[in-house]
Length: 174
Image (cartoon, rainbow, N blue to C red; front, side, top):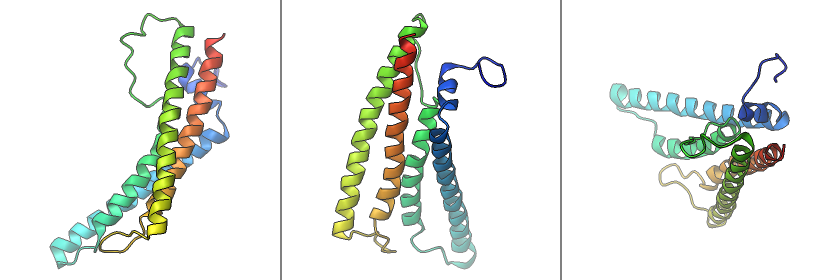
């Protein structure tokens, strides 16, 4: 039951109970959304500049590429915490609540491992780009500027997965 007295699904109840984690994942997702809105505005200005004045924004595709990479990782924690990933329930339809909760716990655990591997590789890749000083071709934007903000989203995804796996494991024991 929620504070309003209505019955809520397990996944939503898991998310509401998050408090700080909920606010953090939502805030990061909103920042990712604002980043994409900025990319959209830049793209519109660049296209208009190209066709009206023959003056596009130089390197707009480099900025778009880096910003979209960061935004994707900003959305992952919120999406996962809200149960927004695609779930196929063909085989689990007839399972009881405990079995489904246990299977969900395993799912969150596996996703935690995958998110951990991605986080590790983003960290290693970011350090590599930082030490090499690798930059984009035209604007010379350091590539590590995208790796480390993306790493924040990936690490937050790991934390969300840990919390969700723990909650579903506890639910499977009830």
